[in-house]
Length: 101
Image (cartoon, rainbow, N blue to C red; front, side, top):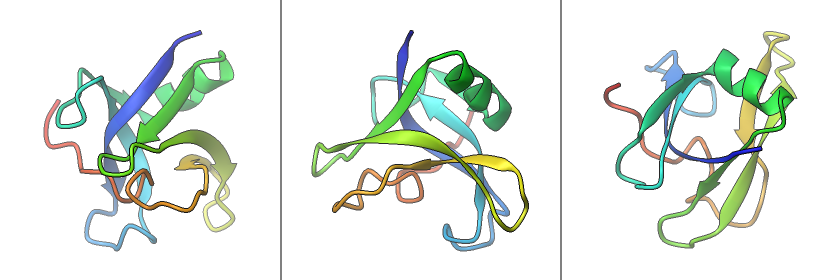
């Protein structure tokens, strides 16, 4: 199955800090400053169920973080997050926001 690099996110509510918001869409592509495709959260979850992989890569550290599904205890819905590691520049909450597309 395909591997996809997440280069940006859309989060709601946008006026909340990243620790309170949920990712509702992601952009993927090979250029960290742009995205080739915008995926809704539902599309990402379906692709993951079909065996596709998603990850992020820190622009400074170069470290790759695998993206995983999780059940939010507050809203009881499936969402995505980056797997924890010792660096922050590859965390989904810290990568740039998708501006278009």
